[in-house]
Image (cartoon, rainbow, N blue to C red; front, side):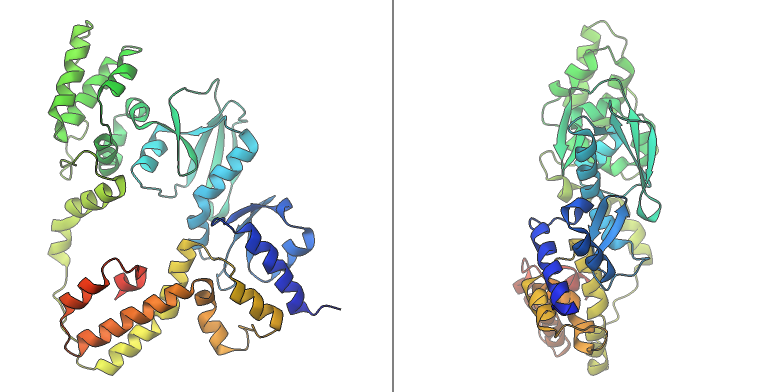
Length: 376
């Protein structure tokens, strides 16, 4: 008869197959009841809602939100595709946030679909989906990170003015991605949205795209509309010109830095200099490894590795008794993270001992040291 650790190894092998391609969310019926219950009991899976599971780490606590937040949008797309097929889409506001590479997890995502029942679906940590029944599907849809969203142009014409105030950075980034204003004009003129046209003209002018603003105003006047240009960013001090064609993620980071730079400088502490007790500081660096590794790997998604399966099968994996297993079990999910941490630690030690920091940092640029380099 197979021993408990051998049975768990079999279940982990099944989970590893499901995790191919980086998946974190699964339907319950993708596993047999025996595998499902065994993996839930040992902390490798967690229930999201009836019929749906999330891959997690045995180290994760019930109150840890990171695994869920890292998996939320994947769940949203898989659940909606399973239930509604292709007949669903998120709001213009969430569409623009996703286009602007700002996948913030909201308390509730409203999913618009002709198949909706106007029902709230409660999820983990106070999040939820609401399936709002709509009459028909709009034509101006695309896909972004697995979500069915409005195109940037369509979303710009549909969001209310208040959204420019709530999410000014994301609106700037979305507007910077528009390469041809005629794609916006077609949607504005189709229905005579003169008020929206005036708002977008003012917004484009505010971010330094005067030619777009002029073209919108001229087109509406030529069509016989009394368009009145207004600035929906009025009162916002962090609105700056964003170069067209810059990747949204890069534009977002630059805009956030520009908007927060002065405030940060005012409160940023003076550089402490090199530590006087080198040994104590290096012990501090070593001590934060476990916490740093856990949070980084939770964001990336815990993945079962062949090494972990082999150790479980051999009966040598026991984090409840073995201190090394307890310390390194997240490193088993991403051995490369551990090696990167050691590399950064060696560089910190070299800098403390007098090596030029600029030269060392330059040699590590692009080496993929991840969050451990940011933490140091």
